[in-house]
Length: 181
Image 1 (spheres, rainbow, N blue to C red):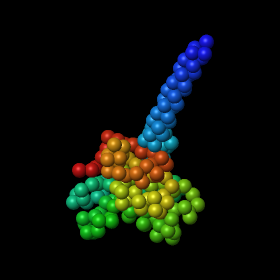
Image 2: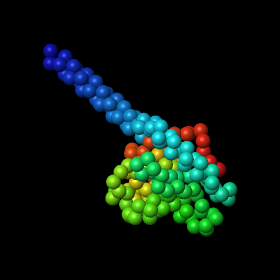
Image 3: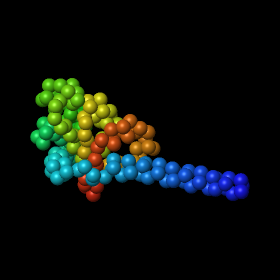
Image 4: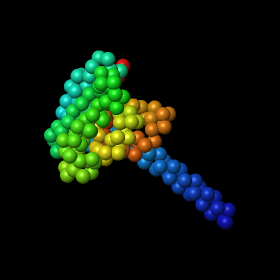
């Protein structure tokens, strides 16, 4: 009888371990899905992303990537920008950085956590590590990305910091449209 109970115990432990592993897998999958899905994306998000794509069209042909970005505060566009690196001969002239800098100057602040209201940055393509650091540093609370990089590429390039703010963003609005050459 004692052996039978041991076997039952071993079976229960194995079954519980299996369910714990499945639960962990589902949690990771769910977080990945939430951070890369259209959940939480509204019609106004789609409207502002359309404007960001219109801004991207203004990018000079000499630029390697057509990227547009707009910063919105409580449903009103505060700033808009497109890549302008080669024309200005300044490698910092990425759309996201220009839009954020303009908004910070207009709002007369150094960080968006000092602003009362809903601040959202819309960008047509996933920010590079430099822009990403600037987004995190200026505390942009919400980022909407039109075209995302594959998660595998982020891990291959060691964009671990990217994951920290990625859970707050919603992306993939227009996966079929991308201006990156």
